[in-house]
Image (cartoon, rainbow, N blue to C red):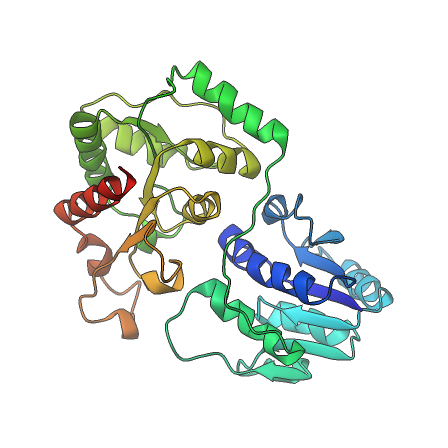
Length: 334
């Protein structure tokens, strides 16, 4: 059986499909699994031993290019396509793949692309669990939602060398901080991150290590400018596997709801994420104690009107609440 798995765009969304990839491989050891995604999310999957091939989707610049893409997809003669993404573009890819079995969520206007549309649960559940619902038509019941991300040895060596260059000693308490997001409804105020970082440095003698991606340096500069205590120096933007290797070496991660937080989950590094518009339960592993989340509902999260608001949900998470939650995590680490 030849399977095509589709998840485009964001890094975190691709990472949330990895439990399904693992479960599919465990259920069908001899299956041929191909994954279609976009850059840079392919970095999450490059070393995944459960996949045979990764296809990189680039937005066509002409009708000819688009037609060539669809013809190439059809020529591969997949037996089954699972559309984890579920937007009109991925539904179209699924429909024109020609696969006799096509699985996707029963979203309005898209269910006709699938032979097996799956009704999504109305409950607020972990995203990895939501995506794993698409395995039901294959007779696969999911209960293990560990995230898979496999760095290479060179990535681990990078992290070790970085810590050495930054002057981090073996017994130092290192807290990674990622105050970044390209979505305004996910960005907790920089001055609040700065106050929490200063508190961690003063109370726990923590060394603060900023994590960021391309084009996100300004978030770091805003926090650093508001801090009274020094943080570790900046460094060149790492690749995604290098970022994972860094998170495997730090003691604690703090940040916004972003892809790096999901890397901390994959690295099994204790974490605290601050949520605005999204529900924390969608992006926090259930029934565990290592990964915490804070959110505030001013009464409108179920009927969100963003951007016609002042982001009260995000600003309602106060500094004292973050400190209290961090103390709980740190005490559990000892």
